[in-house]
Image (cartoon, rainbow, N blue to C red; front, top):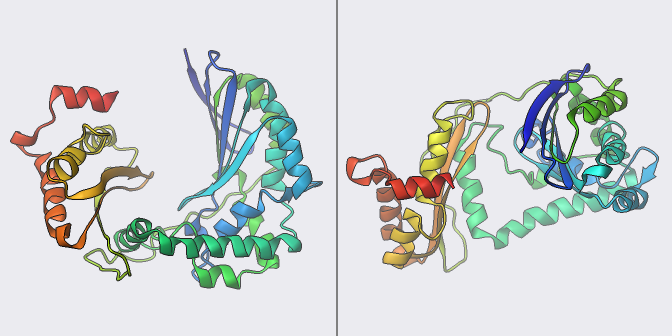
Length: 339
């Protein structure tokens, strides 16, 4: 039996806890308002640089010592970037969770961002961008995102080559305190954790941490419409996007279930109609992504050039049919989507 609680620290950091005494491990995610949408227009990629650098030393621990400290606790750790947030995550035995908190707190409050780490990190980030050239499906998705969402929320989370090349160590160090802000951060913990003990430990660690970050806002209307990206490949990647309910909406759960009916496994409508019955493609799926302020549904199909138009036609037809009387969700589909 799980128990969900939430509280706000004295520094205004919000914390959500799901206690589950039936498991031995605990997972923690710390969201910082340092996502790719917060980067300056000529420095897009700062967030991805920070994400890698946070794993290269903090406080009085260099990169090796930091890794060893996490390993001694048996703690997995990772970082990630989305439009709004940069995330730190760890998974550890519940009995070791409180011991891991100082390591995470140092990553947020005292990252080293040493000069010796800047260039290797830059090269890793540039390599990630270069690797996209071998991922046509990902390139198509990024192209659709760039047209569908308003800037700066339409940026690729890996950043942009020019922005990453322009960043300096002084910029990365100097700008971090502006986004590593207590009142704009969220901590979520799930698993074998005592909420009261966690709150006490976080208050002790983060009592002197302050700050409120400025939220990114849409800079202009998105272009939307059609776009075609030329690529030397034998495949065609088709991506459709449309607006959907934002996460706070009462309709968000219905949208989530509807997309599961369309794309929830080998019994889903898209897989059955586009791939199995007609053999039009090798991959087809849809996903629903939400945010506090907006939501979108993305549907994609990968196929051969001579089957692209038919694949697109069937994809659109199935998405539209879901809202018609003859295409209404069956009880079996509903139960499967809920499960």
